[in-house]
Image (cartoon, rainbow, N blue to C red):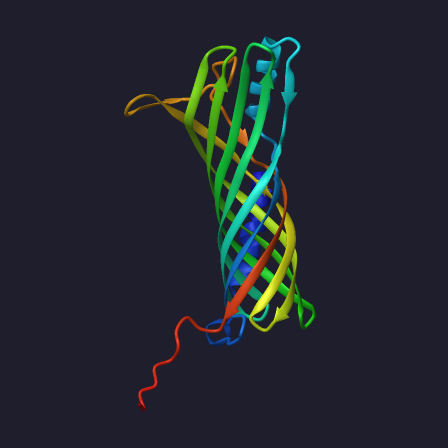
Length: 245
C-alpha cells in the first residue's frame, strides 16, 4: 500500500515539476498566502485502546469518545505556470479529547498535532474565475499527548511522537477579485506517528506505553479532512527599483 502511494506521489511530483516556461510565467496570482481552517477525522490508533482500558476500570462510567477535531491552516502558494501550483503549509491539528469518568475518578487522553507539508497541485479552469486544484505531497507530523488517568494514577503531560506521511487534496477556488479568492476543499492523509516519549525525570525521556500494556504507543492520524480558506495573491514580492529617479 505504501509503495503504491509512493509511486503515485513521485509520478505526480515529476509531472508537475516539468514546466519549461515556469520561470518566466507572470500572473496576478503568481504568489499567495492562504489562511483558513476546517475539521479532520483520525483513526486514533492506540488512543482508542487506552480509552477502552479506562472503561474496563470504571464501572458505570460516562464515556466521551471522539476521533475528530478542528484544524487551523497557514499556507504559502507559488504558481510557476498556469496549471501548476506549489503549496508549502502548516496545519494545527487541534485538540481531540477522549474521557472516561464516574463518581470517584476521571481519565482523559488529549491529542493534538502539528502538520507540515509540501504539496504539488494541478490547476484546471472550468471557468476563468473557478479553479479546480488537485494536489498530492509529503507531510511531517509532531503529535502530542496528555494522559490523565486517575484510575491508575498515571499522568503524562509532555508525551511527543513523530511521523512522515502522504497528503492529498481536491478543492475549488472562487476568484472573488483579481487578488482575492475563496477556497473550499478536502482530502486525506496517510500517517502513523510513533516513537512517543515523555520526560520521566528531569532531562531523561522514556518511551510511552499504551494504557494497560507495555507496547509503545502509536497514534494513527490517517483520515479525511475538509477545509475552507481565503487566498490573498500578489504578482511580486517587492516593487521594482526605479533607477531613473
